[in-house]
Structures are given as structure tokens and as C-alpha cells.
Length: 344
Ligand code: RIB
Image 1 (cartoon, helix red, strand yellow):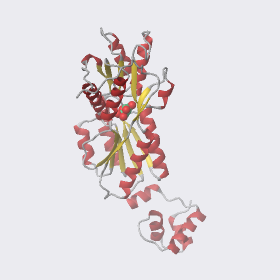
Image 2 (cartoon, helix red, strand yellow; image 1 turned 120 degrees about the vertical axis):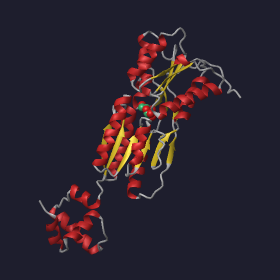
Image 3 (cartoon, protein in one colour; image 1 turned 135 degrees about the vertical axis):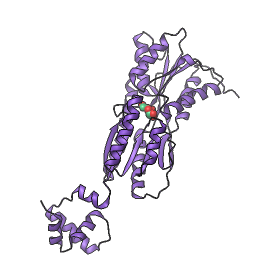
Image 4 (cartoon, helix red, strand yellow; image 1 turned 45 degrees about the vertical axis):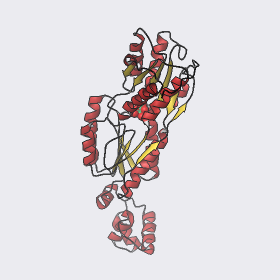
């Protein structure tokens, strides 16, 4: 295998000149650069990534902390992140902290420690549990940080997400515009900031249209299909059921549809359902799911680009970017007729 010494010998330059060309650590004349490049090609020289990272103190590796890449929403975002890292010459190390609150918080802290020891050049954090301890740990890191899908109170991080309060509002307003007044909500965990904000949006819409919130119709799920199923089962034990449900993500909406159908109820005739995310599967459920579509791939691409830009230009000021989510109407909401005016 060719060594750096062989390249220097063939190119007729010093070893340190070869090192500067390979690592981009100092200006080298065009003539010497081209001799080094030719020698590298002729000898098929492969510089060691480890040696290079010791020299430049950069590993061209970014870490990404997420809760579960088994959830299609996260998988679709990660596809955008991974493709962008690949295009821009970075490696991605993915860490799943899990969907349960306790293990999630513990694993987030443990992974943060490992990634920092592995000297990642920057970190993407997606859908973080909103714990003060975790945010304090993030604030102490010296590498660039981009947070996706969470309104984190961090001084030095870029934040990219949709407006979850508005999304929750739009979903609920759509149900109201279709004539529903008995509207329940299967929300995501309160410890996740977008879940909490979507629930706020739901409450705000009901309030704006003069509809009283029935606390029995609000159930906290865990963003899984199973939790949506269980929540719908719980609702079916009540004396009065809502005519429509806003679900904090599509997986919970799918679980709820399955529970309702298993008890002989018809979606949307008996209960209307609207989800959030618009994952690819949403178009193929029975009935096809109406949902608030998040621009998932765009979120991943923008996050990776923003992080790499900050790694390469550390003086860039952190920014907050808000992406637009849109309503996708399919067949899971029944139009009951009747126009409801916004009160006040
Ligand atoms: O499906 C996962 C959900 O949790 C998404 O809506 C995402 O925004 C996250 O908060």
C-alpha cells in the first residue's frame, strides 16, 4: 500500500506539502498541488481518515440523536439528512434514544457523551424530550448544534421545525368547518414540545369557535399505533363519544382507526379522524387518512445543510427556521355540513 512518503517522492515535494494538499491546512501552489494529485492517482494512495482527523481536528462526522427511526416520520426526515451528508462528504452516526420517557432521557445523555468523545464535528437533535437537564447538557457542548422538531430553549443552536401550534389549530379548524363540534384529541407525550403545542392549537381552535373542551376526550398517547389504539378503546368506554378526533401523529390515528373498526364503528361515518405528519402510508390506510403534512425530507435536508454550513463557518449566527405544514384532505373526515363562525 502506498504511503505519504511514496507520494512525496514521486511528486518531488516534501511530506508536509503532501499533507497540506490532502488536508487543505495551508496554501500550496497550483503546480505543487497538481503534482501531488497526479502522484496520489498513480499510486492509488488512500490517506488514513484517522491521521487526517488528528491533523485537522475534524472527523467529517456528524451525530444525530432521535427518538426512534422505526417511526416513518423520523425515517423520512433521516433520509433527507443522510442524503445531504453523503452529498457533502460527511458521515452520519445515528443514535435512537427510544420512545419511552425514562429510557429516552437516560439514553439521550449517554449518547451525547459518546458522540462528544467520538469528536463529531456537529450534532443534529430531533424531537428531543423537553427536559431541563438534557437542554443544560446540550448547552455545554462545544460543537455546532441543530435542533429539529423541538422548540428548545438553547442559546447556540439553530432550530428548524414547523409551527405545531398552528398545525394543531388548522387540523381542528378543518374538523369544525366540516360541521363537527364534539371533537376529541389523542395527543403525543406532553414532554415533547411539538406534541404539547399541537394540543394547544387544538384547544385554541375550539375556544376561538366557542366550543367547550371536554377533558375526558383528551388522551395522551405515545406517538405509536398501539397507544392510538388504546386511547380509542378508552374513548369507546365513555357514555358519549366525540364525532371527530384530532390525533397528534399519523401512527396514533392509524391505531385509533383500527380500534374503532374492531368494534364495528365506521370511519368516517361514526367517527372522523385527522392525523399529523402525512407519512407515506397515510394514503394507503382504509379509509385514506386526512392529515397535516410536514415537509419531512425538506426538514432533513435543511437541517443537515445548516449544520454543515455552521461547521464550516463557525461564526454564522444561530437562526430559527419555520417550515410550513399543509392540510392534505383524503377520506377519513365526514362533512356534517353547517358553517361555524369564529366567536369574537
Ligand atoms: O410521528 C412523530 C411525531 O413526533 C411527529 O409529528 C414529529 O413532529 C414528532 O414530534
